Amino acid sequence: MTTTQKRIKSVPYEQELYKDLCANRDEAVEYLSASLEDPNAPELILIALRHVAEAWGFGHLAELTGLNRESLYKMVSEKGNPKLSSLITLLDGMGLRLAVVKK
Image 1 (cartoon, rainbow, N blue to C red):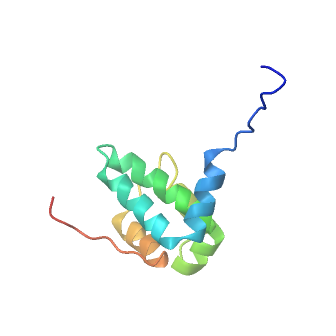
Image 2: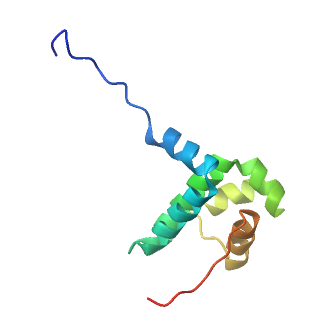
């Protein structure tokens, strides 16, 4: 590297992602929707839900949903396998709902 070149400090993508997801609810909706369109949707929806939950705060979501905070962590963990009723409760707390659309 020459003296005129400057190093660009990298920022973990999660910081910017969480800022976007927290500041803009429509961004969170698009992010979750996009995760469902991928062939690996079951894995990706959990990752996307985890990112949104981390951005919004697990404690805050626990209050909104009435779900236990630790249960929320487990539900969206890498090994998470949420029951449909828990998923619906979580989405409802986020002001969202599941929908079925024709391909």
